[in-house]
Length: 206
Length: 206
DNA sequence: CGCTATCCGTAATCATGGTTACGTTTTCTG
DNA sequence: CAGAAAACGTAACCATGATTACGGATAGCG
Image 1 (cartoon, each protein chain N blue to C red):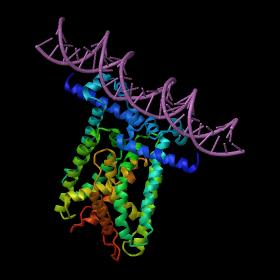
Image 2: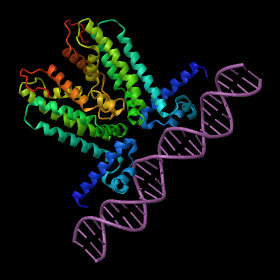
Image 3: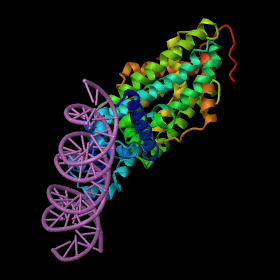
Image 4: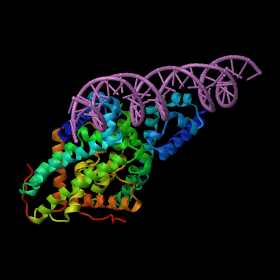
């Protein structure tokens, strides 16, 4: 099978996996059910992904890439850092509490090997925080904020995400709508501005 | 069986459940294994708790009661509210990222009915937030802070817990030690004081 | 004490699913 | 084109576990 065709098959398998996750959650996704839905065989799944954990490891990595790519769009614009953050925040939060991320977090919660959790940490949060740190460094450089960029990024993530994700994962909370997400992201940014005030304003929150 | 003896049996069953959770996690706890460990029969478990979800629902409720009781000790002292918070914070955070709470959160993540998540929300967080709100009301009353107590409690929980719990649940993060917990609680309180400054200091952080 | 209800320990029922295996078909390569 | 490898569809193997059932023992009550 050619690489491009193989990649297309992988895409189809992974799309089928997300469909099944949407319908029946993590517990409702069996390798047999996925093979059927993706019109692949068990043997192919095991050959390509190793085992169920390997499959989910691939899903986690792919999802993290998607999140990173979406954020990078906003980070490279060289425009007003605070305006950038006012766009990054809702988008990042929306992804982190969206169905895919929550399904993958539930998979990690169920994975006794810790493989998925490690992947979530490494490919996800540990990759996003430095990206945010770049934006905060630019904001500090331009005088909009003052403080250590890495610390500001940490405090921002804390105020942006808070305990929303764990409450989503445990089903203590439904998926928030876009307004709630935007409001929370704006509040997080306002708190950052209050905690780390710069000597130049800039960056109206839209 | 007398009520007191029955309560003792329940305590023993629930203690055995936590032992098994410690050893093998949620996935490692079967009703059969628990019956064996608690020297009870399957039939008793099902008669007393209804089903596996019911058992975990009872564990969630009992755990929430314990957390509430522990916090209430500090809340009723009528002493300096900020000193109270400096004690409440580490204790609350330690419980929320401790083994029991994490195991119960993982159970909720795996519970497709949403029963456990609802219990975590109702008996847990929704019960704790108003308690904290009382402390913040006292702090506002005494001029140590200023602002709406419910909002301050929300922001405090956000900064205290942040994404620690979800990272613990997914195994992206190990259990933090006491110093890390205290440091984080102190940082959360310092942020609250910066965001909602009162006109009277009080409450040195110990 | 006798009777009833509950509980224990054990086994059975039923269902599910991770993983491997196999005959056939398809794809790839020289 | 021929042969080998990979993939499909299906079935089997093996394991686990939620829940129910059952005979006997224990506890509670009148």
